[in-house]
Amino acid sequence: MRLRKIKRTQANGWRIARRCVIFFTVICLVPVFLVFMVATDHYIRPVRPLSFGIRKPFTEDRILTPHVLKNKNMSMVARRLDFRRRYLKKTCNVLGLDRPGNDSLHKPNPWEYLVNDKHHLVWCNVFKAASTSWMYNFNILAGYSPKFLRNSRTPPMTLARQKYGRPTLETLQKALNGSLSFLIVRHPLERLLSAYRDKIQYAVPGSVHRKLGKEIIRKYRKKAAHEAPIYPTYPEFVDWLVSSVRNGQTLDMHWTPIVEFCTPCMFNIQIVAHTETLEEDQAYLIKRAGLESVIKPQWKNAGKGSTTAQIFKHYSQLTRSQILQLYHIYRFDFELFNYSLNGYLELGKPESDPSKLLAAITMRDNNPNSVPQIY
Image (cartoon, rainbow, N blue to C red; front, side, top):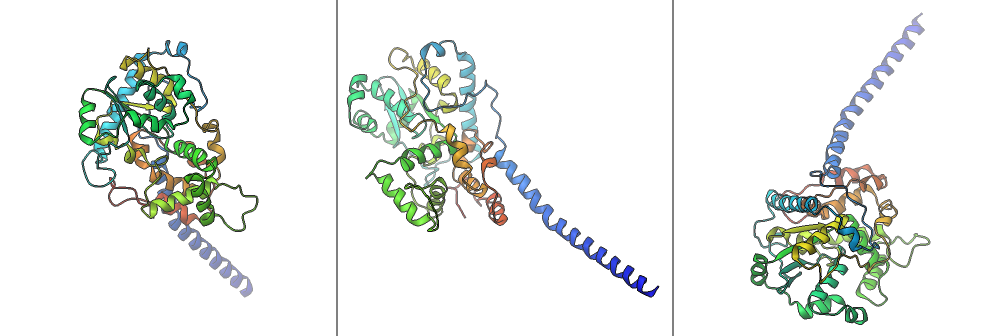
């Protein structure tokens, strides 16, 4: 009888101990779970859904034919572009990016703009966002013939700068007063992947980017890696990029955030075209500029096939914390141009160390309108 009481007492003690362990485990995990849910929602929730039409998937190797564009509803496109213009202006103000300062976000940068005085057109050349197509268009507008451009071995950018000098802040502001200004943007992570494939994976032998690729491999490739390619893998490239930003290094123009490259909050940008709706947007732009008889809507692909088709392959190689770090680097581009992490964050691999993911989720800047810092 006494033995039964002892066993019953021991059993009750174990039950109490288990309940205490469960209780304290729940107390510890619930806050972490809530932080994850709230913070992750901040990254994957669009700032504001666009309601003007359905976006077609963007493919780099698509040829845009004039007869398709003639039937588009230009009034719908005009409303969409007006929404983007107003949205950019409002978001610039909310984020404090329209106030002049001395850093790369608040100091106007006219360097990358091309000004065509004859046709009253101003464009900021965002690399890996239909830049090849519109560099061709601006060269046509500058007086080069299509035959000359086809046969020339001189880089299109060099040809363009021979006709369009680098504008000063004063000349750019003066041109903006009487011109149609525009820039073309792209989802930040798709643009980054396109730059990686063009400049790192398929780097020209002997080029600066080929040398950079070798440097990345030397620093970030594990010695035990087997059957690794001769170029940096996407995770190796991302590790290098994050480290470069952390160390305050100047980024290559092909993957510099648009907010720093064009400083769109410092200027009056009238049209914000998206590569996802490029067919409609550039048709409207050309028509509004009155240039239908001079240039045509088109997409010239200088890369290696469709980047869109490569998104799953490359972003599934990254961890979720790496993807969140990339978001942090390009967060102003995400916000200014109404992009989100939808479809990207889900591709990332789960972390072996949950603390890395939690650190990436809760990453914040003390000054929200400063240059992003990576910790």
